[in-house]
Amino acid sequence: MATNDFVLGIDIGGTNTKVGLVDKNAKIHARFDLPTASEKPASDLFERIFKKLDEHCKQYELTPHILGVGIGAPNGNYFTGLIEKPPNLKWNRVNLVALAQEHLNVPAALTNDANAAALGEMLFGVAKGMKNFIEITLGTGLGSGIIVNGQLVYGHDGYAGEMGHVIVEKDGRLCGCGRRGCLETYVSATGLKRTVFELLASENSSSLLHDIPFNDLTSKMVYDAALKGDPIALKSFDFTGQILGRALADAVAYLSPQAIVLFGGLAAAGDFIFIPTKKYMEDNLLPIYRNKVKIIPSGLPESDAAILGAAALIWNELD
Image (cartoon, rainbow, N blue to C red; front, side):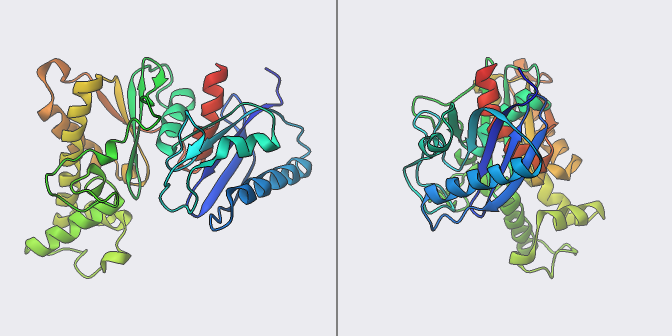
């Protein structure tokens, strides 16, 4: 491939959209962000994307040969190119692939951000050379992308792999999806906050977190308190790891992956989340699986992961 061969990676979020040209070596060129503004038609966003891309290429004297467009978006469907009932976006059943191809007559593909992260991990991150692994994205919610035999699992309708909405506690916490006890209500930045406040209400332990209002509390604050030995913070991470570890033990029984990769803000807690997750997973595994599955941090830089993951959709198909 020529040195000016790129894939355009577009990651559409509820507030902002990230865009960049990605080469085969995972280097991002002509990177920029812009408001998603989903109160306007999706066509408006794509017009702004390609206008700004042209401006950036002229500014940096870049003449890219764009091989394709990869798009990551909430509830993005690889099979249809549609986003359907996406959280935090006001569009529904909009064909983003078709909109991209109105501007560039090249292959285009769409999936959700967790699936894109898994492909990015396989091409550019710690999962290079792996053919069976699970990517877990730990942010406000919990997403997952599942790779089996070197292929992303989409299922028959394009929506496979929603581990965040596996029910782990019967009649448990209310989830944004409307059901109760979903994994992401316990294992996410939001879930960690809820655990902290439940422990504060049920225990008499002194804690640095006592006087912080719920809306002000962040997972980083819980991490900082844990570093100081705060009992509530430590118990919160242990409980979070327990719930995640049990869920991963079930996933291993279905998939027998080589590794489970944790990505996102909560994964940045390091040993506070990795050690209990590994312990409780091993405690709940069938003996034939024990000590075979690694739990490892992502190799993608968080600031670049969304664009790299979106671009990996196309690079993976070209490979």
